[in-house]
Image (cartoon, rainbow, N blue to C red):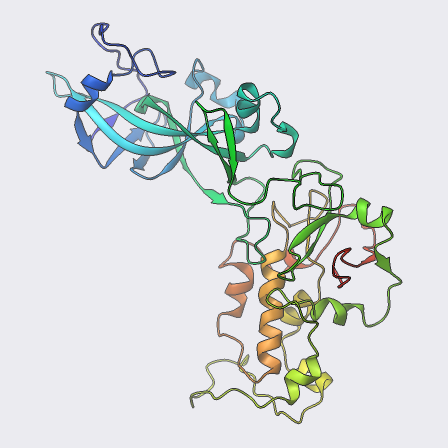
Length: 379
């Protein structure tokens, strides 16, 4: 396995063969690359003698070109370039030292895309957002910083994986030579709100509400909802109206009908936890709801919200937790036990706390009883 220290190994002579477009001027040519030895991984040993392993398929943060490791203390995480390791090869010198080079597929920042396509709306990209490109370069292993998590964001998915504020994410692709951005989901703004303006996760004033019903699955700015008067006077049953807004059905659920329907056939087994629920079809709705853990019911009755002012919401808000909690409530009312690992399901195995799914705004303002402009369901 090739290893190296924080030193840049220069090529011994300047090849006459043209180098790869946009790459390091010291990088190998295509002809040289073909003759190099392939590896599955390499190890970086930093100045503190800490080893960092990088492997094919990893997404990594990379020191920006023309910056040195002395500049690292001036860089924050999102200042690093992001690339995916496609291939690893090394030139083995006579002294048996390895000069390791990596074929990297770049993920552009919004500003990088804006430098190429002037019409691209840079403001719609968060500082941790990256756009997957078809641009490859040969990069020296000397420039690699750390392995990074990069998650996909789909704004129409009610079960979207939680993304922390400090995690890289991607929702578009960029064809560099064609100067064309492709959207792996509806173009930002085309399916967002009545204003058609995209979600800007770094805008401190942004707060958006989501309608999870399959025919809607649309985010709305709270300011636009207020302007359109898409709200109702808050009533005591508002939490119940939120609860019946299903991520899997366009119909408004009648919870009493779930309770009175025959329970699903289950295998006989000894209860594995205190959370096992068995509900009689003759039980009242209130009695049935009391058997559901408070945390599950409270999360299921939350509005689905995202935005900078929502504490604990990260990039995508509480959409996954609320959608999963509502499904758990529907299943429990129908006679199905909660899964033994329901806490792990709602926290996505420790990615967040249960309390993060409860909407708390930084300015402590009360959230109005908003309704979806399209289906008029509670959001």
